[in-house]
Amino acid sequence: MHEVTLIQGILLFIMAVICGIDMWLEGTYIFRPIIVGTLTGLILGDVKTGVMAGGLAELAFAGLTAVGGTQPPNSVLAGVMTSAIAITTGKDPKLALALALPFSLLMQYVILFFYSSFAFFMAKLDKYAEEGDTKGFARINWLTMSIVGLTYGIIVFLCTYAAQGPMRDLVERMPEWLTTGFSVAGGILPAIGFAMLLRIMMKVELIPYFIFGFVFVCFIPFGNVLPVAALGTAFALFEFFKQKNSVQAQPAAAIKDEEDYSDGI
Image 1 (cartoon, rainbow, N blue to C red):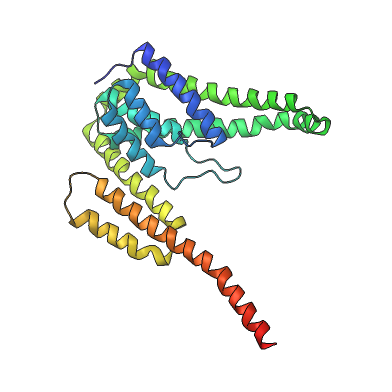
Image 2: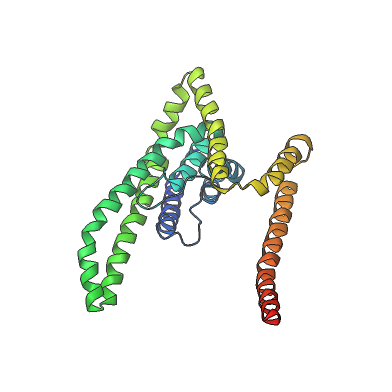
């Protein structure tokens, strides 16, 4: 078990502010659970558990994407709390992932509240746009972005530092059947998240790669996932260059057809 110190709580606050703003802007994608979980593990002094917990949360949230006004469970809180719970309680990351979901749902509703309440600024922004007041427009954007970032930081600080005692007591007092159930649920979530992602991205012509990768992972023993990453990179490069050559061949074919048509005339 690990106790979160005040300094670590402040560092988590700063990290959450940065990641929260990045998620709001979708700028550098450091808000993804695998990165947030790794950073949390680095701050709390257990990078290995942070990477494992973040990777597990990343798989679970791989297929969840905000579309229009919809907002899925928050990936930043999922990454932070999965790693923090796993490190501070010493429990399996699968159990920690299941216990992190309420925090993720909490932040989901907070963001939805911001989506609604920030509509108050629209009339002001329209006025600034008509007047060409770029400074006023920028002030409101900085204000709303700061509110979102600080909210992320405050919630993460309260959940990881202020509430660590009750969280630890809750996990320790759980009966074995309940913790087993949470662990099973946490183990299923990554499979569901990956299945949702495949439903969106999977194309018929890519199924052979999927089957090959499945057989490679399940039936060929290796010490780490680096061979899988290298194989995936090779497949991705093969498809990239194949698509690139196909696109380049289309204009040449069109020009040839035009020349044949002109010769016929």
